[in-house]
Image (cartoon, rainbow, N blue to C red; front, side):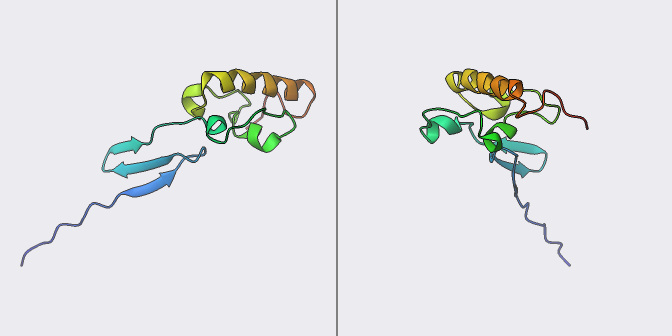
Length: 98
């Protein structure tokens, strides 16, 4: 009897920023990151929009870097200022407990 080899399936996963992650064996292939604010042509980022800001901070409450979020330098500077403003007004916590 001949044994048939199983086809190697690619698993499609998405990380918390919506980037597609494909796994082939032991390799991980990630798509190119893009600035979601440039893509949507956002004029200003509001400090009261906590749903957007929650995705840009870590579980411990730190501001995530450009490398992790994929935002451009211009929007990263705006995001940092907006998050600091929201923290100062007590809309967001400075730290989080795990």
